[in-house]
Length: 97
Image (cartoon, rainbow, N blue to C red; front, side, top):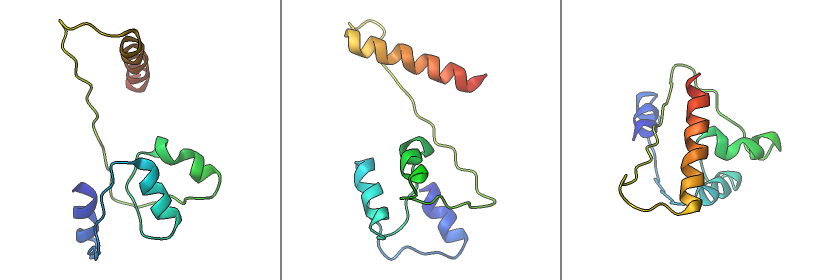
């Protein structure tokens, strides 16, 4: 919604609005020249480095997307989930510094 609102403020109105649950599907559509997308930089870094995607440098718009991770503190955590949470905490702590 933030992206769509920013487009509207610039006088760009969508003719077709597609939503996918797969980042890879979104990237493939953009690479097939079907439109533009709003994705986290980390998900498109390889394609940008390879020249398969081009970032749009949009002055005046700063988009921040918040991701939350929740779990029940009294429930058992699998070793895989526990490892994921440990890595996530380390990465988030590094971005705060």
